[in-house]
Image (cartoon, rainbow, N blue to C red):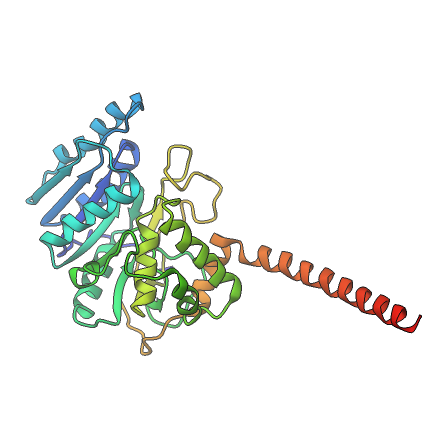
Length: 325
């Protein structure tokens, strides 16, 4: 683990801060933003949900974070008057951000950044600004201590959105409803990325559920757009983002004992760059195994195959006996 910074790095990038109804985590994340002192800060807040009485006060408390800006900073706010929900609310906030900025950093109210996260994003936003192979920079590392290569970061096909940065050139391709993609072609295209039948099946199921409106997520469409543009994501070899929002009040991350909850923060002092710009497929498989329970599904599938094989042998044996009678 790299040693911690003694002084706070001040970011060059604009920052979008997406908040809702969790003032406790909002102010914790804001303290890290405050330490980085962005010169342009965008704050987007969804409105209280109808018939959820506690939202009124909680949303008001979360929005008061805008009153705590005490450094020289251009501040823009987008406070919804009606609740849009996770998918529409966050994607609209990012639309707004990249309408105003060519590039920048996006943090949600439960994504606690290390200070060097900001330098990491600044450095790589500049380095890969015009490299269309690179579409996404993330701050979270979910590899349970496993390092990929000797550089400060590696490349993957998956996007992770717990603290990330990107460019307008990438976000313009975002397709919230996946209207540009034909359901019949998706399986073959995902198979070109992950040659693993269960992983492909999981993504195909997610795609169908997204198209049917059964998953309220803005992030999965970003994965698919990255896949179908053969894009690469930069992932640090140290964890620069800790998701502190797991719990009963979360929209999706409700299990507090999740392996990805509250992963300790590290820092990256000196950024070293990899020589090979190729995706680490096994790194993606590691996270997807946990997300999609791939190994458990394989064991179940293998058990079924073994039973089916024994059953088939029994049928053949009986058929042979009957053929002799």
